[in-house]
Length: 80
Image (cartoon, rainbow, N blue to C red; front, side, top):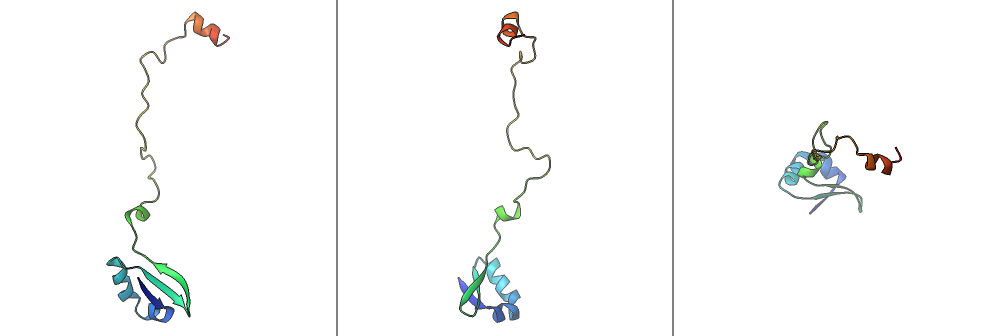
C-alpha cells in the first residue's frame, strides 16, 4: 500500500495509476487524514448490472398434465 498527499496525486496521477494497474492500493491523504483510496477494479465491479433479457436461472419445467382440465373431485376441492 502506498500513501501519498493530494499534491503528489495531482502531480503524478498517471504514475500512480500505473501502480494501481500493477495491483497496488494507494491512499491519498489531506494533511495527516486519509481521504481516499485508489484500488484496481475487479471483474465484479466492471459488470455490476445484468443485461436486459439476461437469463439468470434454469427454465421452469411443467409436467405434461399441467394444463389438463381438472377432474370433478379437484373442482370440488377448489369449491367449483
